[in-house]
Length: 135
Image 1 (tube, rainbow, N blue to C red):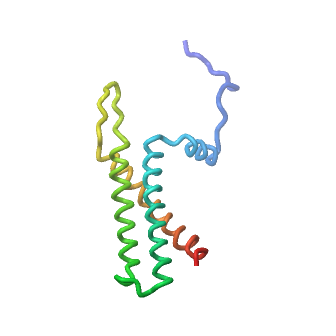
Image 2: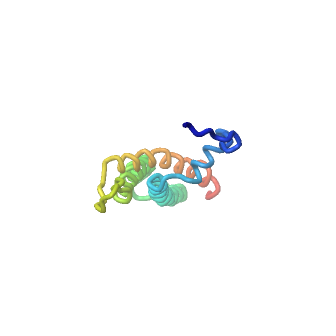
Image 3: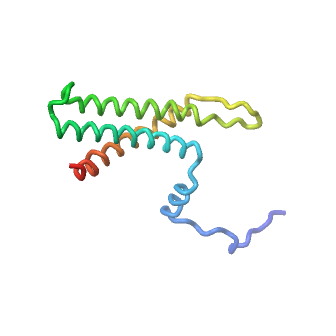
């Protein structure tokens, strides 16, 4: 015999915004780790770039010339590379019943794809929003 559910016991449908907010608050730990690693690396390197940019704007005759384009390219490569590598190291595959932590290329891919938008957004915020206030 099938059991009938009480219509009052059915949970209410959530709106799109409620579902997204719940997903944001309860993000999976591997995703949080990947984003945190990439964000940390991007912020540290963006601060280094801002220091170089301010030094160059105050004294354009610095030795080596204007290497801002090279600095941006190095920033992107380092954020993507370090974000992928560290995520690979700190996000193991699920082990099931085993105790051995296994690494996977999927962890590195997670780190890479988390680092792409973060690298762009942090540099945009640094150059377009913070840099004008620093003179």
